[in-house]
Length: 228
Image (tube, rainbow, N blue to C red; front, side, top):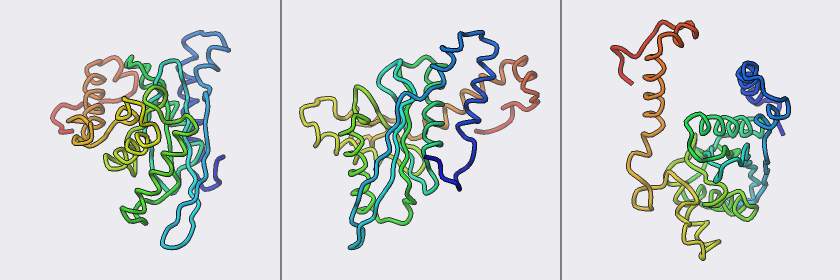
């Protein structure tokens, strides 16, 4: 579902950019639709007792493509997140992975919540319940679907999710691979926190090395003399 007050057109804008790229590729229409279509999406609603009262939380996990497994993509916590946004972000994950040729499909998750309004203990219970819902429905697994940090989440939430998966499936010796972006002491890797920023830096650096492409984009700026 798409809420009335959500940022309109995110998924439409993503598809518009894809259509522009597809227009020069001359692919069969069926292939084009297969590239753009979201493979599956789940919406979950679950109760958690907060300060003596039951609150219902709504979350989503979209799998845009399973052409390679596992599907990969973050989980964000934000009060305005909705299905349209999650589907759009999952599609972008597919395209990003394909462009740099890493062996993952695209996925994304979101929980409609303002994490600043909850204590650490409350967020842990909410996160673990969300992880349980996703895992039991096949949307969390080292072999099929691997979340990561995103807006509103970080190493802490990933550690909770990995631990929840371990308790649900103790026979899976690869349980730590259920998520990436974990703390180093919980099986994470050094450099993960700054990896996204470095990726942006490297992508911009390579882009500005191609003068023709910069000109096509009608840009005159470069990274020369700037700090990232």
